[in-house]
Image (cartoon, rainbow, N blue to C red; front, side, top):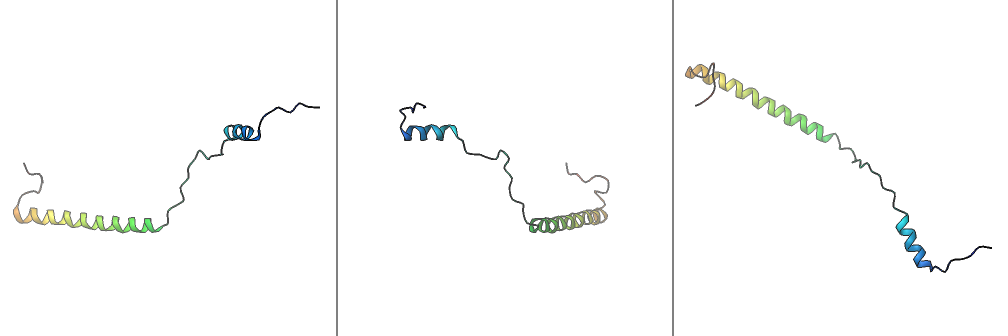
Length: 76
């Protein structure tokens, strides 16, 4: 026969809660984004590219009209 220790149930329960930890995943994985973001990015990229092209064209036209800024486009 075994000996039963004089421990109250609530004491054992507190001990059990201290010892047994919750299982946690060390790697946090976010859920994937929808492809809507990619299409929005493509639109922004397209708009940005078109505005850059018009800026280059306007610089060339301005250089032809004024005769300056063909080789160096910097103000001092």
